[in-house]
Length: 398
Ligand SMILES: Nc1nc2c(c(=O)[nH]1)N[C@H]1C(S)=C(S)[C@@H](COP(=O)(O)OP(=O)(O)OC[C@H]3O[C@@H](n4cnc5c(N)ncnc54)[C@H](O)[C@@H]3O)O[C@H]1N2
Ligand code: MOO
Image (cartoon, rainbow, N blue to C red):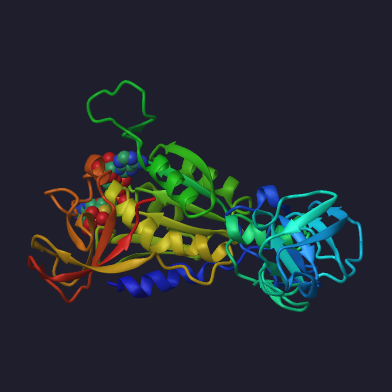
């Protein structure tokens, strides 16, 4: 059996950052910046006022109170370039450029708010309430580095450079294909033996949560030719394919059968529970394929371990790890000998977890998987978790 870490490495090795495209800022959320974005100008671009008030000369506000003549009115956006000479002031609003001659901003609260003349009762020291050109960034500074994930703050930084578009790695399109004769779409009446396909929805949602665009297909019946034709159509038109089911040693394991002669795809056992039977590789057209086991908790945990990091890498992210933390197991449980365990857990305190369901990591427990907030990763060498033990928990809930 291959170790969890080794298989994760093989899964990640199939992925590389996708080609770069230029997108409007409106479409940039969740995408990853392709090149360093530098500023050509100082930011702020000019000295400007941090307060609504009056721009004055410090020498004029030493003996207070005093009355100054108002020679200009400068709202934010004003292109006027008045000069504040001795005995005068410019009314100024937050964000307007500080006019030549002025070195001091008097907030309106310290004046009589006059428009023809202004009575100044108190004044701050020179430079207070002035936002200096270049104090945020100077020309040549990298403002948004290659590899930055675009969220609200980073998009604001790009916009503040005056750019309407940004070059990013294309968002991965990932096909998810569920297989199994027993599956019907949710909402369809069930006869004995049938069950709703939950994996294609699970995987489509997981793709979206990983920042990809899912192409959901399924359920595909246990028919080798039908599945081959679905995969051939997808090969070369999507960035990755994820299948569920049909990879163990059953008589009708369609995914394994459909790809058995494909030299680019290997099937193997990984020392992990759930998620032991796995396959991965490239289809003839070069598309990476990940064939996950069909048990829903196995599909969930396998996607988390093997597919999600690959999608993050395709997006151009350097860090493909989930945030993890050490937590205390509030109860004990057994783990399979010689295999790592991925135990769905939920929080019962800031750093305490219990199994999400009393039946633990059983790979069919799809209904109660909904309670899982984390996956405790128990190394293969550990055969028993005791109450009070520390475990590493990946935070997986959205
Ligand atoms: N003799 C052996 N049998 C099994 C072994 C083994 O080593 N020897 N391994 C077991 C393990 S571990 C797993 S995991 C499963 C994986 O099997 P498959 O990937 O072939 O999955 P299926 O047989 O197609 O389905 C398993 C199970 O999951 C249900 N399922 C499948 N797809 C969906 C879906 N889209 N939505 C909801 N539920 C789904 C399916 O009905 C089965 O109950 O093999 C074990 N067997
Ligand atoms: O590997 Mo299976 O996923 O243990 O149930």
